[in-house]
Structure formats: structure tokens, C-alpha cells
Length: 440
Image (cartoon, rainbow, N blue to C red; front, side):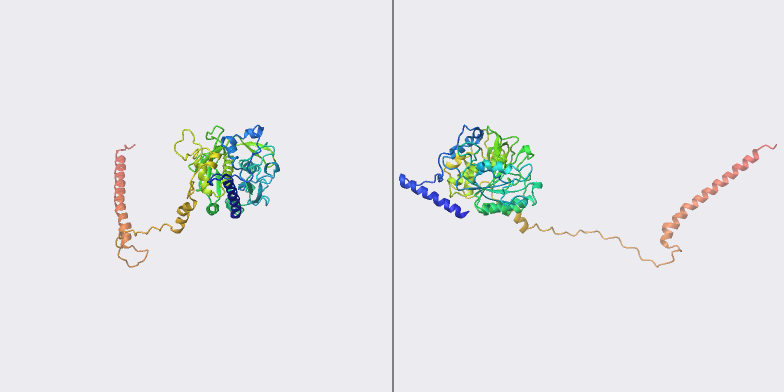
């Protein structure tokens, strides 16, 4: 990746030098047009292009006057990018499968339900479009793609957390400048293996773009990987720029908003499909990130993210940013490329390394000391009775007399006396009756 970026930088510098010689002006840090920049084959009257409302709404067509994403590589970690020549042509320059069930090139659609998902995502990011300017076109139609297939549920033989960690590293090692993750785990936390995998991407200057998730799919609040510090989390809006009720969710880590309703996508079999969700909003932003990196070859990943959020179109009524629905606002491709912004020294979306230090390594390195046990004072027991000489179990002892015989006598003697008195009284009554009985 370093060699490729160096070559891209050298070519860009040569173009700037030529322009300086011809115009006699001083070079300024303005967007550098790529070698292939020129009129984009684009027919807005084409029925398909007319449906891609985000091309104008997010000022992508305007950005194409500067760059179309040449020289930048977007890794799509998803269900696989289908082999559709008219859509992707030579766009896919590499791929792999990390699910254990796909093909080695990562181009086999995985999943009976979601198999087309990866192709839809890739087409929004970098579909080529037809040479005559018709058919679906992606945000960065000259960017390269990496197809890394992952499997969900039964479509995988490898645990999902392991798939993602391996996919992230593979993408970085194979030249990704931007990584797109259009999935959610529906949980705020993430597997610890993702710490190193995402740090690996950040340490290698890669922009990681993540979907926020959709309420319509049961996601009421963002989940990992959208909760990982440092990623650019994308929320969704409808055609009017209003936060989508079904095709988006909310959360404090949302950085930017992009269209998530009425989207188009090219399926693995080449057919055009309509779909909704932040899974589509994310690759629109990933494509814009590719345009920025193509226009500014030397730019750092953290500056790409900063440009996207700082040039966002404000949402009416939203005063405090980032907003849990819109983040910093609606994405604006042309402004993100042309704005004159100073470089930043930290990722505006957070620092994963610091988070790991605070919440992972600190706990492991400095475990909480076990509380010291305080002795409990127990009052002394009463003195034991003096031992007695053992005797025959058949003879009474002092204890048996005290607790057995004497109480028994005390109860029995009165009972006997009462019984004798009753008997004597009964005899007297009987005798009296006999005396009163007349003789016949």
C-alpha cells in the first residue's frame, strides 16, 4: 500500500509542477485531479441514473469534476461481490473468503437471503456504469475494489468475530485505503480480537466506514462495529434529508448521515434491485472517502474523516452536534474535497488505542486488590460442666434424676392422689344409693 500511495503522490506532484510551470502560479493545497479526470460518461436523463438522487443531493456529480476515485482501493467486507462485468468490469482487483464456505477469490455470493448484499454495497461505492453514461454508477466509479466474503449464521464455518478480525487484516495487507463494513452485531460491545484488528487498520492509515444499523431490522440503537472508537459511523436519511424511521437507527457515535431509502443496487446476477438501509448509506460515504483520498493523495485517514464531518450540511433544527440521529449533518462530497481545512492530530471519532488502554489493558495489568478479611470477634462460650465419672447406663445419674426422674415424680404423685380421691368418692356415692333403694 505504501508503494502504491507513493507512486500516486509522485504522479500528483508531477501534475502540480506542470500546472505551475504553465500558469506561473504558486502551488496551493487544492484538490489534485487524477490522470483520468474529464467529462464523466453520465446521462442524467437515463431512467436508472435519474433514480440515483444522491448523486446530486450529496453533490457527487460536482465532485466528479475533480476526481472519480482513481488510485484508491475500497475493501468491501460483506457477502461477496458478484462477477458482473458490466457493473464492475476490472474494478475488483483482489479478494478472499474468510467464512470457510466461500470461494478463494471472495466473489461467490454467500447466504440464501443476503447473498446479494455485498454486490449491492459494492455497486453503490464503485459501480462502473456503461460507457454511454447509462446504467447504475457508483460514487467513485474509478476506484478499485477488494471483495472479502464473510458468512452470517449458517453461511459460515468460522465464528463471525474471527471472520471480521481476519478480514480487516487481509484488507489492510492487500492495499485497502478505505474499508466498508455494512453490518451490525446489535450489541454495544465487541470481541476483544477486534481491538487489534481495527487498531491494525488505524495504524496503517485506513479509513473505516461503518453502517449504524436499521430500526426496521430490529436495531433500536447502534451496535458494534459502529460503537468502536475511530470508525466513521453512518446514519441514514430519506430523500428529503430527514432521519429515516425504518432504514436507520440512532446513537451518540454517528458521525455523518447519507441516503438510506430508495437506493439501487446491482445483484450478484446483474439485475438491478431497490433496497433500503444504512448498509447502503455506508458505501456512499466510503465512495466519498475514496474521492477525497484520490483528490488529496497525501491526506491522512483522520483528515479524511475530519473533512467529511466538518463540511457536512447542517440539518435544520439541530443545534448540538454530533446529533444521535444525524451526527454532524448530511454528507457533502464536493465540499469535503474542496474545503480548506487544517490537518488534525487525532481522530475526531475517537481513539481506540486509548479506549483499549482504559478498558482492557488497565483491568488486566492492574487487577483490583482483594479486600483484606477482618477477623470477627466471637463472644466466649460459657464454661463447660465439670466432667462426671462414667457409670452404668442402667443406673440413674445426677442429670437423669434432675431432668428426668424428679420431674416425673412431681407430675405422677399428684396424679395418683387425685385418682385415689376420685375412686373413694365414687364408692361413697354407690353406697348411698344402695341404702336408699327400697326392699321388695
